[in-house]
Every structure is written in structure tokens, then in C-alpha cells.
Image 1 (cartoon, rainbow, N blue to C red):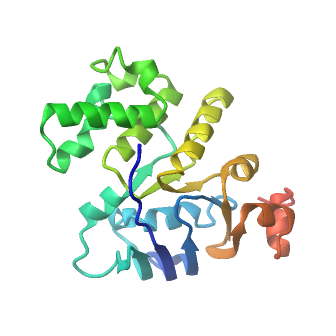
Image 2 (image 1 turned 120 degrees about the vertical axis):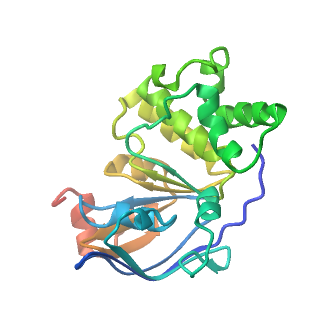
Length: 255
């Protein structure tokens, strides 16, 4: 699934508040293109809040406030007037629990392209096939595209959600613990899929699984109590962390 990627993602002094509680504190980092970046840290440390900040999902929370800048393709996504619909086309999201729509497999994948104005059946057919192939699902479902997506296994549903996300050709894919509800075999398929997809997409994944982060990511960011403690190449973070707290978390002393 060849596509030209144009992703420069830079986070500057990002702070997120839920009412009076500060969930993220002055986060500064640059996300590498066509790489997998893993976000690790104990529960409640700000990983998912940070992930949702990258496509303004926190806008949906009434008491959430965001200060700082997230620069995507040289534009601040928090500038007044920024088109959030277009943002979510550029930055797709896959959640912890597979959440296919109660529609057919075909209609799940075609949903996004239809929303963005593609109506011709031939084009939709091509997009559905291309997206399912990219999500390593086509061979398993090509003879039952009109069946309900809810009939698929959990692992298949999650790959369908990935196919749905990439059907609108985003630059960035955000994944919030996408394999935590899956068995080891389905998890391995998701990991293999993400490794293939990074050839065409920038991937940012929240995971509690240290082994998973070490296996599939190129860079790792360690969050703790709303702070970005350490960020760098995964091998360095896991084998030669600069911060004692990072080492303590990775080696299981807390978390």
C-alpha cells in the first residue's frame, strides 16, 4: 500500500488539565516518521492522555484543557480554526477494545472514505480490498465481506479496526494498548502487522507490555506522574537508561 508520507510531528510544552488536575506537564518531544514509538509507564501516568492529545480526542471531555502546541506538517493542531475532521483523517486511532461498527465488514472499512466524499462503488471496492490486505485480513474475510463485523474473532476485529483506520490514508496511526484484550497468537499477528505498516505510516502505541515495546518499537517514551521522564531509541531506553526511575520501572521495581 504505497503512499507518500508527510509527517513532521513535534510536541512543544504540552500541558493537559482535567478540571483542576494536571495530567501532562510540559511535554516536549519529536516523533520520528515511519517508525514505531512506544509510550510506556504505570497506569495513570499520562500515556493515553498524551496519545489522545495528538488527534484532539480530549476535546470530547468537557473539563479538559490543553495548553501548548502539537505541530503536524508545520501547523499547530490546537490553533483556532484548525479543521479537526481533517486532523482525524491524518491521524487515525485504534482503541484498546476492538470496536467495529455493527455493520458488515465491507461497510466498516468503507465508512471513512464515504464520510470524506467517496461514493463510487469501484473506488470503494478497491479501498476496502487494499485496506484489508494492508491489515493482513483480506485472505481471511474476502469471501464474507457482507457478513457482520461482530462475527469476527477479537483479533480479527482489531485488525479490522486497523483496516478502518488506514482506509482514509492517514499519516499517523495511534494505538492505545491494541493487543491487551487479545490472546498471544492474535497479539503476535498485531505486532507483525504494525512492523509491516511502519513502512508507510508513523505509529505511536501505548503499551503496558515491556516485552512488546522492546520487540516492535524504534523509540520509547517513559511517562511518570504526567512527566516525560526519558525518551530515546528503544535499545538505549531498555539497556542503558539515563534515568534511575526509568530503570526501576523497566526492571519491575515499581509500576
